[in-house]
Image (cartoon, rainbow, N blue to C red; front, side, top):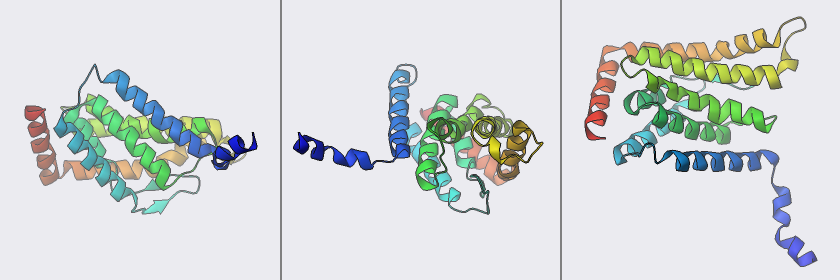
Amino acid sequence: MSYIASIFKDFAKLKWYSLAIVAVLIFISIFLYLAQKRQKFSTKALVYGGVAISLSFILSFIKLYRMPQGGSITPASMLPLFAYAYMFGPFAGIVAGMAYGILQLIQDPYVVHWAQLLLDYPLAFGALGFAGFFRKNLPLGILAGGFGRFVFHVISGVVFFASYAPKGTSPLVYSAIYNATYIAPDLAVCLVLALIPSVKKAIERLSKEAYIQK
């Protein structure tokens, strides 16, 4: 009996957030499996998705300002994911965003509860894919995706970080202000870059190529 226990003893060393990460990965795998009959990814969609996630991940390492309870201002790290959702639609964008959220969790975790982990990582970043619902208007899509992320972070703040709110301040107001402090500047940079003629033209060209060949 002791031998059997020794075989599995390393499981006791696992932190709860490590198990949560595994659970999230399993959840995403099940989500993709159930959804594959509705939309099949082309090779181009997979390649573009990998590039978009990689670019966002690299840009996320450049933190212009780091918030004390999680969150940071980066040089438009969300833009590649917005552009990807704009090119391939909301489903592909949400999946790419969720995958990016897992990378963010591994890179810079700030976890107090498994439900907060879901809200602040796969769900919040998955919401960036909402940009895909506005495939004729990228700026509007960027606002929609950014607002979706903001909502999930605000919910997380109200439920799990209410104790940080100053005395007499509503947790909802505190969470909204806190999250807007870093999401709004990040979103503004994405919007400005997306409106630059050369950047806009490049995204439109890639979008047309993706539409023709997918």
